[in-house]
Length: 170
Image (cartoon, rainbow, N blue to C red; front, side):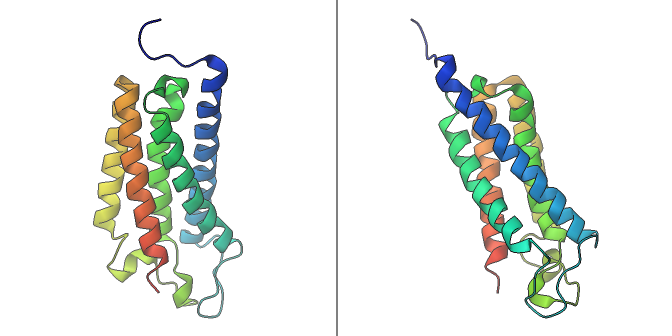
């Protein structure tokens, strides 16, 4: 046996876990985008979040952490995760940061002040940096699975840090 190989039955968990994380990212991103577009109202009292907001925030943070663990554990066996999932993972993770950045901060309910209005993270310039790194990671994932997974780990670390920082600003 030459090189590093992973038995198929053991490699399947990587793809399933990465796909699950991707789905959670997509749901959280759509939820936060619905708040940003005022399709889901935030509370009428200061500190009152939109219905399900606390669950979405927790799911976003937890899935970033789980995603970081899965991606980091999969760098050497990156081919076990489908190319499409490898390409979408950094992009959809960045969409969570962008949609959260434009969602309304419940601390300032009902004034409709967005997280990005505070001048802190995620300021629009920072969100562009995260999106640019995500696009590069998706591109690298197309040509080199292992380096792409490493780049995706960097994106998830940036996204996790951004979400943690925005959640502790009050």
